[in-house]
Image (tube, rainbow, N blue to C red; front, side, top):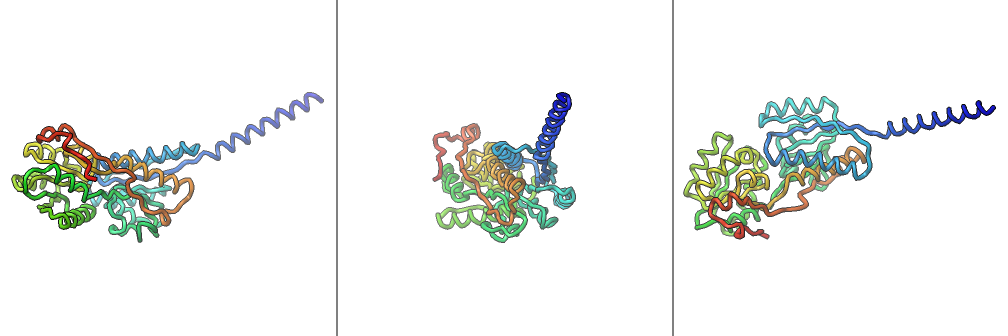
Length: 322
């Protein structure tokens, strides 16, 4: 009789443990996230790493047993690659898509209107036809905008520039995000009686010659958050140092790579914000349609000390434009 009772107890415990094991197994979630990036450079790389860190942080904070599998593709600045890679990520049936930079976001939006899609390093989602409004996207797309304080950045550049020559602006006229920032720069310049000399370059091969055309004609150079400019920062930085020219950039990463200073956003932090939005989509099943577009929560004054000293400025001269 004791043997029968003992066997029953052992059997019961076995079933209980098996049930607990099954329950634990079923509580573990696995998600697949497709990431597409327009080109490799500091700002966008930081945004991608920040995204992963932000999502991981949220999962850990909420005690979620979760595996996230990332499918990362880089278009290397090629539009034909964008189309092919966008289609590839959509066909993989990922739970979420992340588009890094405006052209990528637009390419993904053309391939799917159903897969939840978040974007980052996109200046104006509405102007790029990604959302109906920033407060109520109304599409399968939302995310974080990298719109920088263009006016404050120009104010900073003016404070670092010597003489009365115009402030130069160089940008890629084929990037919508850059066109918007140049428009804002012109508005600020008009309101504050600043003279600008605006030039554009559409490939890395153009940048050296365009810079040469500005030599002796400007007192400082402003570069918006432009993917082409970001990719060429080392070249721009070398030319600017040789000309003793202050360079204020749209992003901190661009200033690190060859600028003088900036008052702007940190792309790693912006990526983390996007990662937190991803948690809401994946775990809490929120829809991008109802998630307002977010902007950077913090702005920072960054000084590239080596470049500042190289052009004859003291770091104490670089002060927050606010």
